[in-house]
Length: 246
Image (cartoon, rainbow, N blue to C red; front, side, top):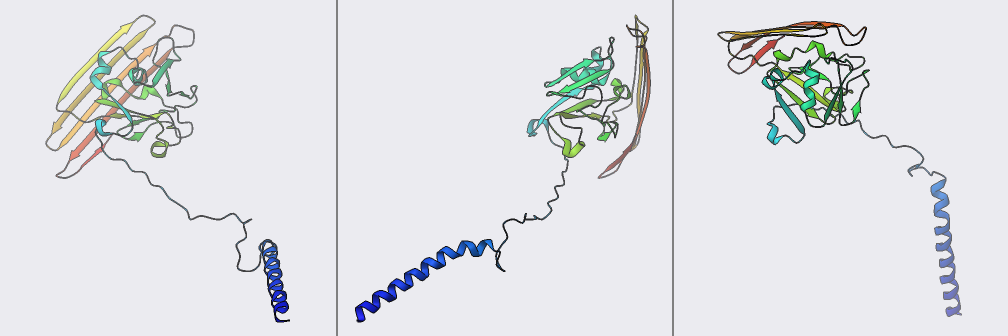
């Protein structure tokens, strides 16, 4: 009798355990208090990423950067700064004008079709592209005013706006010692081109002035264009910093 009752007790415990295992999924589905509801989308904390820029040598840069000296641009017959980008690897330039000067930039396959430019332009880090469309007026950039062009290939939109998918162009105007240079050219179809660049230092203050004028009647009807620019910059140097305006 003792042995029989022990067997019955063991059997009853086994049935109770099996019943508990079978009932546990049903308990989870009913959403008992204290359990996590898997149907609710979890909300993560907000993560803010703040990019920053710093001066880096091209040789140690982790991104694709090309530097085009201003003397190289002035030595070749480029009609605009945008045309000069054709010498940069990874960038193709097509002209909407038959005589040049109205470029369309294609950077690593990104092409805006004239409605926008996926390589926004900056002067000393200040953007000049249209805020609404991101298009760049390349006639605003006199080729003789810049010491060099820095072109970053690849997406830099997190630093330079949502239009910088193909790269970024930055024109630098460091003021050199006293200098005076000018250029004049002309040709058929009413092409006229003139430029003047002058810089002067006075103690810890340096100033520069650059002006240019370009006009053309065009090869086709209704293609005439005229553009003129005047750029001025003044910079004051201190013991540990400097301030500039242009």
